[in-house]
Image (cartoon, rainbow, N blue to C red; front, side):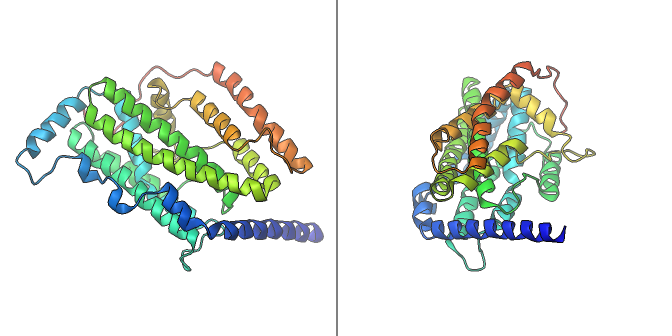
Length: 337
């Protein structure tokens, strides 16, 4: 038993060392990657660009217009927007997780840690902007929303990646695409409802998420080039565990960890902001982007992992066909009116 334990321990250490070497080889080009996929601060929009200027005489009238348009927002749509805001505002959890990935060294200020900080800086604008908009809208119980954010940061999340960069980048590739879809759909629905300001806000955030998704997908593609079998195992692992949303521990006052997430997901499904089919479509797009079907240089176990991943969309679609989304709306404590 002791011999088996040491053998497994040595194998794990070997895999960790290989991952560290791969991360180090990619780290040297990180400044170019930051320049390619992220924008200079001077060129970025800031929340103040999208919100009424409190120093002008028109400020009060601008707030009244925001509130008039917000009154027309569908209950489920507003619920999804609030849940998206809480998710965005739990950014400290995501930054801490990324900083603990093997190969990221914030003490030495290596390329990976510079990427994480630059990505975090862009993401920070999202929750900031949405929070201020919702405050001005007059429809949100801000204390209840803030408590949900407080709970979510305090409770953390469990996404089954540990400190493994391969698994982590599969997660971020998937999740950034999912976030892009959610914000983009909210923007579309807001525009149809005549709320052009909120449509613009969500559209800009969606655009950021699309760039971030492209960057993380690029990381995975690079890893597939140098360590295809282990990267394939990581992809299989994440799909077997399922990609859980960052807010899967969502709750409100008096609730238990995660008991609000199902209601939030149901609202997203009812509004078609983010659906089970979207999850399947993201999986399909990533297998195509990473050329999984034609991947060469895989060992036998990685070939089996590839077979699992390629067959998964069809399996998930059969399950999705049998799913029924509750029609009854849950009464969230987040909404004031």
